[in-house]
Every structure is written in structure tokens, then in C-alpha cells.
Image (cartoon, rainbow, N blue to C red):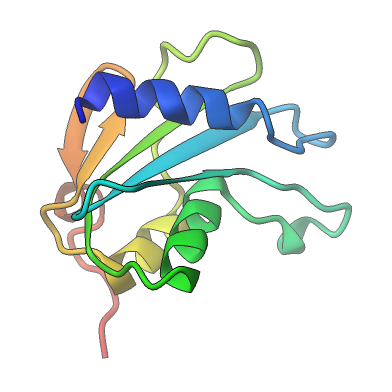
Amino acid sequence: MSDKELLSIAEKAAENSYAPYSGFHVGAALLTKDGRVFTGCNIENASYSLTVCAERTALFKAVSEGCTEFEAIAIAGSKTVDFSAPCPPCGACLQVLSEFCKGDLRVVLSDRVLTLSELMPLAFKL
């Protein structure tokens, strides 16, 4: 699957976002090594700390289905339907991704592709 196709799936996932407080809709599409794609969207809560990001939603869905090997994640976010600006993952999502993904995980952000290690060079590990 191409990065462009994966990003398109992330944009579609953003349509399911529940963002009544920020108005910022985010979708993620996580590609497994065996070719499956798990999607997620951000889900806000009136108690802000209980909000969950799109990236973690996709990852938790994948892990709950037994997938623990990943190739790429595409992330699309916007207050409008224009997803042309990059929407990098927050620090919490980067840390959670680093628990399950190798440093060479491709992170697809609209007009650029980075690795997880580039975005989170010093992830906390036990």
C-alpha cells in the first residue's frame, strides 16, 4: 500500500472523530506487517485528560486484535476538511507507539514522511 493511500484512509477515519471541544478532527491509519490497516480517530471528553488520540485508538485496536508488528502510520488532522498541513503525533502518542513499533516505523504526515526515531529520538524504555 502506498503512503498516499494510507493517508487517504486516515483522512476518511477523521470523519468519525468526536471533537466537540477543540473542533480539531484527527484520523490515523496504521499499517501492519501483514498488510492489514487499523484506523482510529480522536475521541474527546469533557474531562479533557480522558480524551484519546487517533493514533492510540488505531494502535490499541490493532494490539487488541493480536497485531504487534507495524510498517507505517498515517495521520491527518484539521479543523476543516483541508488535511494539507502536517499533523504530527503528540508526545503521549509517540511514547505509546515506541512501546510497540521499531524506530524505522514510517510516519506519514501529508507532505512528508519521517521515522518514529526522528520524531521521538529518546523514547522512554525499561
